[in-house]
Length: 245
Ligand code: KIV
Image 1 (spheres, rainbow, N blue to C red):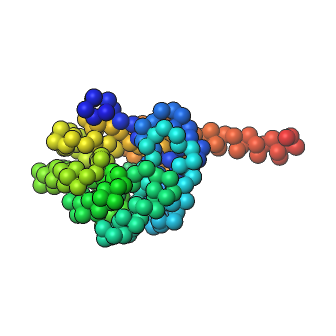
Image 2 (cartoon, protein in one colour):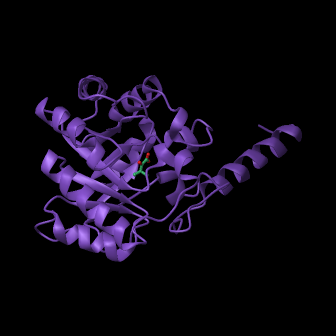
């Protein structure tokens, strides 16, 4: 698709109905993201998400997917050595994923190589790394300084060389995302990284307005599902309290 100049579409799903609805809508990639920890499980960030939780949601989502590529997101502390990375990735395949994603650039290239050598496709993820939000002190834009931009380019080339089939660029300065996109043969999938990426990914809850307590600045919600839920719940409460069924 990158070679043909076709944009790649990706959204997250953590359950059967959402995965099936996205799949039936024609999405290219469904990511069972560890963002599940925030928008479904109610954690403050993704650093508490466990492998068991991810596998549980991957199994559910996989039952709804027929066409899209299903990618499972490896949670923090599950790919600390190449051996552990391969074991974790294998569990995602057993749970129904067709590929895995992990966070990190040059520091993760050994893990990516090992997973790819085991026959499992890997999506890389550079730029802002939510699993490191605590060390970073927040969700900060990446690539602002020439040094950061060069590091990101180096990271992208490293993950490509290690065998990743694509790379997520999270909140990277648009010009830097464009440079990375032009410098790599694998597709870049942007989130808050401008229009020049080869594809775009969003957390579905942000896109459909299902997590109204926080919406990232770069998202333009296309629906207000949380308001619909509140409206339906209030209508049910009123009808029931008034003795109607
Ligand atoms: O966990 C997730 O949903 C992600 C995407 C935002 C890329 O990593």
